[in-house]
Amino acid sequence: MVYDRQSNILQGLAHPVRLQILSELAVRPLCVCKLMVLTGRRQAYISQQLILLRQLGLVNAHREGLSVYYQLNDEHLQELETFLQKLINKLQSQPAFHQGAKLMSQEQMKSNVWHEIPRSEIAWYPTIVTDRCIGCGMCATSCGRGVYAFDYEANHPVVVEPQMCMVGCTTCATICLYDAIEFPSVGWIRQLIREKKVLRQSKGLLKQYPEKYDVRLRRNAVVK
Ligand code: SF4
Ligand code: SF4
Image (cartoon, rainbow, N blue to C red; front, top):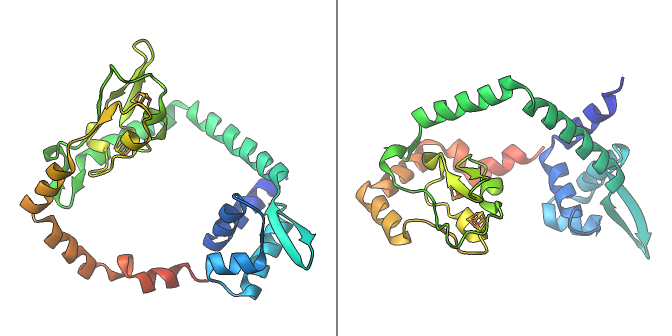
């Protein structure tokens, strides 16, 4: 069937260690020894994952002296990327997709709290300094929370969902090369944390949900 190949590849990708191996190989070719160090896994385990990745056509190998180096198979990854991009384009062209996204955003807004403080009571969101903004769009295209829209006529971003901004996050300001995004000060957010006794609530969460936060339990969850 026409989708068998993509389905096999996606199943092969659905594994934390294989994803880690691929992301390391995306930076540079590596031998098994290096991958053992980076993943903290035994040789047999890494070799097993590499065999599978090679069978899926995602990884190639070549010999350098006594070592075998593994690298991404760009051709097959490109094919997968094209397939996924087509799928995304198709989904985005469906009115139901936009309706669903809108509903999700409204639902999120209703239940939007930060450490039990209603998000509407926290004035943490970006402000655009339009005089400095050159309209590159980095902020709007990088924020994964839909905080920004872009005004194509005025050529600058607009903050349309301020309460979707993650409290304490300043990523868009960090990546704006023109310092055109401002946030409340660090002192302001720390004062809020003190006033609202967030530390106590955070400690309570650690105690209440060890299955979510305990490093040992988390590691075991990843180990297969
Ligand atoms: S990243 Fe900075 S310069 Fe670029 S659009 Fe956003 S605010 Fe403007
Ligand atoms: S700080 Fe983070 S979450 Fe908030 S608008 Fe910028 S990128 Fe989005």
